Image (cartoon, rainbow, N blue to C red; front, side, top):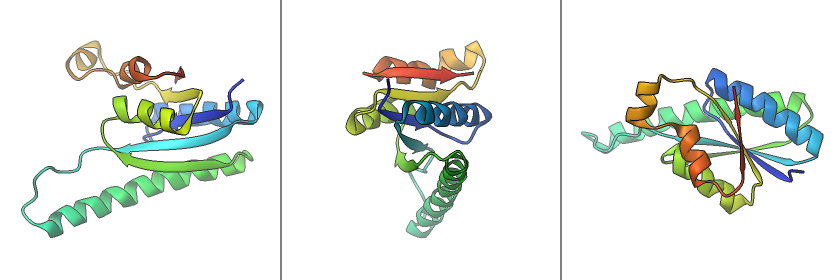
Length: 140
């Protein structure tokens, strides 16, 4: 039985499937449900501080919309959902955050990139599984 579930969410079609699976699991198990969106892609160098602030504001707005959409779907199912947004690399941030929260299940969506893409850039799901101390459900 799971008590605390962490959903890795990026708004992709695979993540939407994982959202529905996580809501279903939380409802069936009576588990606490958390969502983690990992903010990637902030520029390392910007010409001005204003440019950096503008990009950060755009990213914040984007991730807030993702969280709001997921929270609405969970609310419609009668499941409370707590959203979190953290900057970093998903393969390491997600397992670290799951440990910090004391989660016993991570739910992530499968993206289905090509084998070449996975070989060059690595697979996020593989990284989550490798770095996690708890069970990981990859939803296809």
